Structures are given as C-alpha cells and as structure tokens.
Length: 330
Image (cartoon, rainbow, N blue to C red):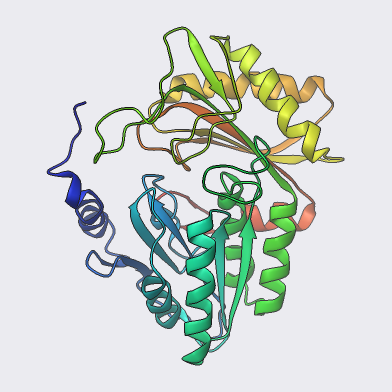
C-alpha cells in the first residue's frame, strides 16, 4: 500500500507540524500533541476541548478556532489521547469560566477524558463533559458500550462553540451540547476498507462488488454486507436508517460526509439523492454541509448525519466560525 508518509511512527507528529506551518493562528505542539487557538484563553469565555484518535482529520484539530473548539488533543492513529494531553489543553483554554469536554463515545476516550476531568478539577479548572453517541448503526461495538460518536460530533462542536463564543455560561453550553447530541443521528457506508500506516493492509476484507452498511470511523466493519448499490439506493437505505431513529418533526441540518477517499463529485451526487429522499419523506433541509470532515483515513464511502434544528440551532449554525476546516461569517 503506497502512502505519502515518512515512516509510520511519525505520521501524527508530521501531520501536526504541517498543520502548524499552514495555520499560524493555531498553537501546535507536536511533542505534547495539543492544538490550541492562539488567542486562548479568551477572557470570560467557556473553553471547549475535544480529541480522539488521529486518522479522522479534519476532526478534531481542524475544528480549532473562533466559533468552535478552543483546543484539540490528537492521539495515535485510531487510539485515544492520554489524560495529560487533555489536562494541558484544559489549562491552556481556561479563562475562569470553566471548560467543556466534548467526548465521542469510545471506551478509551471516555475513560481518559474522565480521568483528565478529575485531574483538571484538582488543578482548579471547572470541567463538565458531554458524550456524543449519534451512530444508529449498532448499539454496542468493538470500541464502545452504547452507540458510537461519529458525525454528530461536528454539530455538537460547532453549535456549542458558537454559544460559548457568545459568552454563554458553562451550564448553558453543556446543556445545549447535550441537546444537540440528542438531536443528531448518523449512519455510514463503506465501499472499501481503510488501511492504517502501521499495518499496511485493509482493516477488513470487502470483496469487489460489495459494500458495507453501518461502518464505524475506526475501520470497523458494518452491521450488514450487500451487493453494490447505486447512489440512489444507498441514499434511501441511509436516510431510512437515520430518519427512522431520529423522527424529526421539523427542518434538519444535513452533513454528507466523505470517509476519506471518495471524490467530492460523488459526494455531491450522493447529496442530491439524500435531498431527494428527504423531500419524498416530507423533511425539509435547512442547511447542508458536504465534504470530508469526520474521516477514516483512506476509507471509500460516506456517512449521513442529520440534526433536528430549531431557530436557535439554525442561528448558532450560521454564527461566524474560523477554523482550518470550517470558515464562514465575519
């Protein structure tokens, strides 16, 4: 398997050095593996910290900046960051208004963020944690007890980040983040498995002419394997899985997310089918984001995340954001 790397052992550090070179508005430490917005801590503002295994870029480091995260902690490929990273991040962004940890529901992330919260509290930082568990594909998985945290993480970080940027207190930012998580559902599809740099072979075997429904973002196989389908057919299956669980009674925010190796042309074609399927089911799409945001290295495929939206969430979605991956507004 050909990869644009030096050696597997330095992939994460090399990527962080490149992030620092491209984005001087961030403070990036490749050794301690903490990425912080350069103006942190922002006086009077709740700090938002998230993190997880590398290989999902731009999640999470690409979401650091005004209007979203204040800091991110990248681990090794598909491996949770360690508590020391999270404690450093919390200290770096705490202005005295407290810190919110946004934690995807994977066992390693949950345990390490819990430990980090205790350590940060011992150092005088008020910490509240919010769990993201939006994936409807499985109840339990290789890496979780309960549903996995996937594309809904983007909505939680963007909407809670906007509220924090407006000056909302910690309890309100945390409550909003939990409400957003409760309003999100995701479902993913793989056309080809990903390959980790250390292993050099696909994480699961997927024969030609077949696809995997309900995959995770750590290279896990899905809940069902079928023969190859058209974009229209995949959209119908995906929308039914998400809508059947979410049951929105109003407009939605939609994330059509590439898993890393699917061309944008195909993602936009899939988005057209998603909009068609939602319209046929009487669901209005208020905002749409298409692209590679919550990836799984070089996996071919996509995921759909829907977030049931009200006027407040739409306003927070439209609020300015300036990060490497998301950028709009003033």
